[in-house]
Image (cartoon, rainbow, N blue to C red; front, side):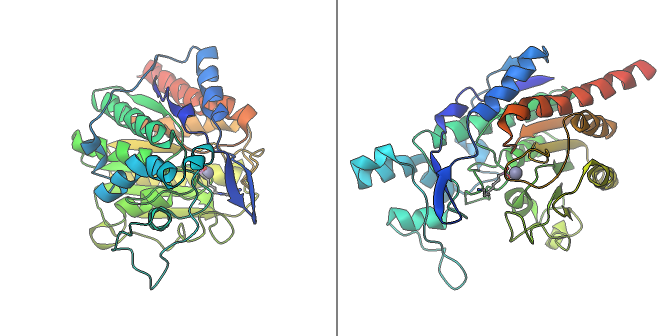
Length: 354
Ligand code: OKP
Ligand code: ZN
């Protein structure tokens, strides 16, 4: 399987995130992607290449112009407020919740940080834009490769993407890589595309982007939002809107869920993907379902991920894998590559038997 690696990912290196009333070191660190890269190389998993550079217009199928304009200049604006800001990251602290206006774009920088974000856990740094932008290129390149006939491709990038909406960042995410991949598959001629989000956290951004569309099916298995981030989306009664009714399906599971129940849920989700008639699949590959994850609550173990790959291969669809979360840094490489290896092995067995 070909991997598009974001060689600029470490440009995004947040220092601190707000957690329970104090600033704590970021969980979403560059070493995460480096461990996955090292494991791919160790197993000689296939070509590892830099992404093609796509024009900003490729982002507009998913994100709003005013959000992209904001992200492009945010760091410079932050430093312009005070040169000393160059030594610290930007975090939002005020948001336009119900009854406040989000149609007006304030000139005040802090006000726009809040307008374009959903939490105070996602620091914006000097290199956030270049890292996120190159990550988008990875997702778009992987989708293009699959559209060009590759059975599967892997976008290995950080920061992650699935919490980012059309016009907001949050949950460590800035550009929605999985949504960009899905939209690119649509543009390249796949009529019906499914997104399967396996990250521990509900992919609220991805769901919202496609919620009223009938051409992109979104389904997600995640920690119950009653207790788990992002709290305000990801419930089982969210089935889509308008033309998209029936094209959204959530599978919230309680903390402590182990591989037996998780795998049975995956099989349900994949049978719905088949019923939808998907012609291509995007997998939001979050590895924070791992038992050792420091901020998550499922109990999957390292060998289980080979089985996950096997299940995904059985769907028989051209597949784009997009790296999302996974914060057990020492194990994230082995776990992620286990999924990809399980996928490849199942595929080779199928080839032999036909
Ligand atoms: C991003 B992705 C931990 C609080 C949780 C947000 C979690 C974002 C997860 N201190 N903060 O879905 O893996
Ligand atoms: Zn997550």
